[in-house]
Amino acid sequence: MLQTYFPVFLLIFCRITSFFVVAPIFSMRGLPSQVKIGLAFFVSVLILLNQYGTVTVETDATYVLSIAREILAGLLLGFLAYLFFTVVQIAGSFIDLQMGFGIANVIDPMTGAQSPIFGNFKFMISILIFLSINGHLLLLEGLIQSYQWVPLNSTLFQQMYSGHITDFLIRTFSETFKLAFQMSAPIVVAMFLTDVALGLLARTVPQMNIFVVGVPLKILVGLLMLLLLIPGFISQFEHVFASMFEGMRSLLQLMGGQPAP
Image (cartoon, rainbow, N blue to C red; front, side):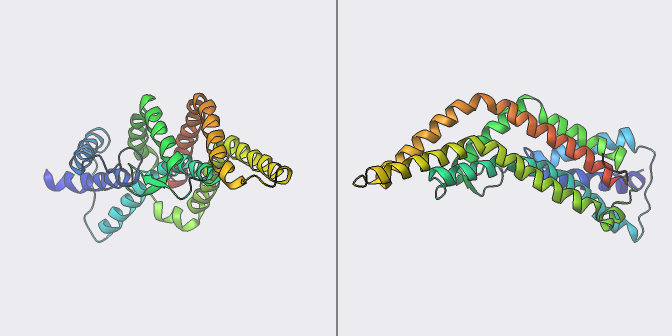
């Protein structure tokens, strides 16, 4: 019994674990590794009992390639989900650069790396909104449903060789960059207009030290704009999350050998 089901369970466990390594929320450094491994174990058991209870896998030389294929599938899905979460950090970088906070960074709670101040602020809000709409459960649901699109005997390597998945990831990266620019556009435009006003003031009143006045003025204008824009964050993040789930569905279609819409 163990020799029959353990190879199938190991393939499922590899995809689930690799997804948790890079997926948002599940890959946070504050989440203990024991919790991640335990969650991956129980999810793998559920998938094995519900979908692959009667499936057997040959443990020959191609089994190593099957493990690599499942790890690649989990990493692709997790990376795509994480790519949309970087939208808020990229938008925060644009804002910090215009407000003069570009030199100051804080620690990102998910990766442990340094991130911009406003990017980290927006990132924490996005996590709260994502959890409030049960986005983590939707990620798990999409991961479980991925076995309907990309089964254990899929042709993922052939799809990667064709280049369609690479093209899709490049287009998705461009889309996330566009979303980040749209999210930061109001404050960036306000900072640009503030720079124009300061330039006119410097030409009108040359004896005024424009650098002493300009830095706190830009920070004040930026904070006021951020205060006005906070109520609209919910709709912005919901649009980003909707694009993320739509992108995951399109990626699953490509990984399963079907053309994306």
